[in-house]
Length: 601
Image (cartoon, rainbow, N blue to C red):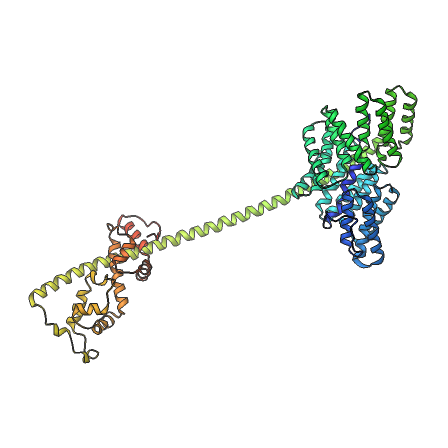
């Protein structure tokens, strides 16, 4: 039977059909037959490429002609684009539409235009088309590889990863021609690029080629079936017409597992799809299906199937597989004892086989392979160099970040300790002041008690000067002394209803004298004076290590109406919050270096 590893040309056409979609919007919903304005080059280009995607070559050719008409009637950049893409679409459309003679002319014209105008993206597609022409029509596989590699260079210059991936699939197919499954890595590269970019067509072509490469290796058939099933899903979801090639590969994989009945069904599907698509498909399905029929002793049907395949190649389709069909007919007739017919078909195959020296071609292909592998290795080295530079940049950044963090940490620790020492000094001073004031108050109390018992109370009228002379007369000393004695009692200034009137009543005088005492003797306003006394009382209580009164309760006991006022006035007096003062005082009392400045209440 025909060698299974021969490259299958029909599915190759699918590979280049969407090359230009990377350079334009892929509007899959616009069919080639839609009414599109003649001046709308972009829509015509998309419609033409969409038609090629769906293997609708007639519609693609219509779009190509319309683009050339626009180019003839226009000028400037628009005319250049219309001319380039019109020739590309016609060249690719004619290649698989019984008009091969026109294909090369349009592809060559597109190549000249791309080189003239420096359009590398379109040039990559042109080289791909020329490579397919060389492999499918001229059977010049080294020449096809040269075109594909030229296409790779153009795709790189245009930074078009999609074109690059699809060209790799075609190169993998040329490897398959030489029974070389090494092309698998290129097919998988295309497949992975499609997965990363959610590009169904790249997934489809990559999966198809990968499955065929696995079929050549005759290993990992289960994995190959996974790929071909994924491609089958995309085939139906995206309405791709090239189902013939897919079911041919599907059948091959099933035969490798010994599932000939299921394989026969796949080959029948492949044949039906080929006939429905104007004889465009994989004619080798006829060969495989005939082989299954022959083994089932359905010899007449087997020969009829091969005769149908030969008629298809006679009509100009699948010429690349004509040798396979002729050899399959020769072998089948020999097995049936028809030696005359067998020799006839062998003779035709030999006469038509104008293949040049196979060894020479293999050397050329190996040379081209080596060129790409070396280039790939060089690119990998460059990629690793870039990654190394990027890693060095990241390491340098991290070192700088660590250095900055270290400097900030040291600065923070230094400032924290300085602040802690300052707080300790403030607390010690305030605590000592509070203790000294407490001792002085006790002494004053004792002296007042002694004086009171010796002299008795003075008449109330002495402390009540006449109103008209208040502002001019000096403040009586005994009134100042009485005021100071009264304000030694915390119960007075911690009263949240304290006022000048209330103090005046206690001193049996009027509020004017109270204001004058505070202003002239202490140099404060009445609220400032009361808040200073409350702050000192707060310091005394917070300095007491045994005082566990919550700050909120302490605020109320000191006469403040809110915690906010308490915190504000205490901070103004000491430079610390009440919570920080208490914590620092306890640390000093315990003989510890300060902890944190915790403002918890």
